[in-house]
Structure formats: structure tokens, C-alpha cells
Image (cartoon, rainbow, N blue to C red; front, side, top):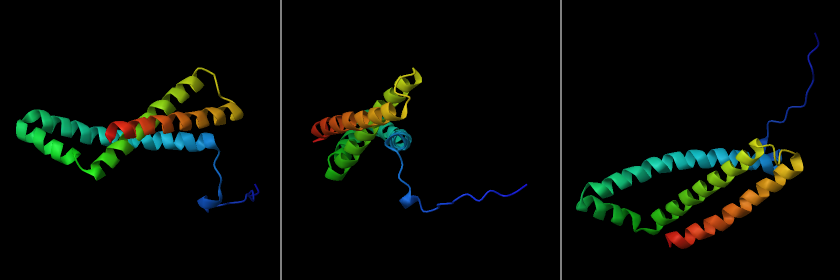
Length: 125
């Protein structure tokens, strides 16, 4: 048995991923961000409902610019995860499975997420 000589490229910066692959990777990342953010947001909700002092403490935490920026990022990740999930459900139904239509649906998902992210920015600030 002969050993196959295949080219090996370990420099990931030189590999260009298709837009559908980037979309899928970002969908997973946004899911992880949403999971961790949900835990923090549920803790903040619990604190705000515990007492008046807890509510005032949460209001003080949420009042900062940096926290608003993080909240905007979390809302953007949630929006992308929902849009990407809908895209995957459509693909599970048998639509947009080809390379060209998959790339187009990924670009549409990015566009819809940008619009939703801008709307979330308006809501946060």
C-alpha cells in the first residue's frame, strides 16, 4: 500500500472559505454567545425581581455605555442566530441547497441581520 502525497496547507489565513461556510460558522458562534448571554440576563432578571435594592442595582449596571454596547452585541448575535436558524430550516425543507443558492441565502441572512442589528442599536440607545 502506497502512501498518498496530498498537499497540506496548515496556514488557515490563506484558505478562503465560501460565504455559506462562514455563515454556518457564525451561526454556531452566535449560538454560544446567546447561551452565555442568556445565563447572565436571567441572573440580572432574578436580581431585579428579588427586591427594590436589587432592581436599583441592575438599573445601575445597565446604565453604562459599555454595558449598552455588550447588550447591542448580544441582541445582534441573537438576531443572527434566529435568521441563520430560519435559513437552515429552509435548507432542511430542500430549498437553497445548491452552492449558488446557498451562497445567496447566506448573503441575504447577513443583510437581514445588519438591518436587525441597526434596529437593536436604536432600541438600546
